[in-house]
View (cartoon, rainbow, N blue to C red):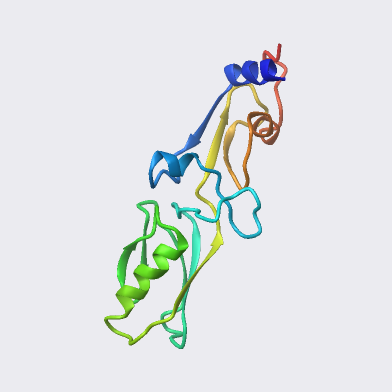
Length: 158
């Protein structure tokens, strides 16, 4: 089985797109876990295109859903722009609370990760559908090839 995986890896170029490269190298190599997605780590760091909801208790005008921009920043009322990429939900929640405390006494802020969109994998080579795919869970080489529709008749599988 290991020989097959090595041969498959040699036949195909599979690379992770740097949609979530924030943090240390150790952070990037740890598996990620999110509620409802068992293979993700609870210390997930936000990345580009992730969708978050910012809820401010008793302040409906400040409650909003926002996507993390490609530069890793978000725009919110009263806080202007904040760096969200590379932060955990808890870290971002603290940053928003700190910014809002200049305008509101004792703000209660909750940040909810609504949709994970940043981790992606590119599958190229002799597969039926070479493309960039979203990684919603931990994936190995064989899963990536299956996701891309399997081998073409020209692939060297031996």
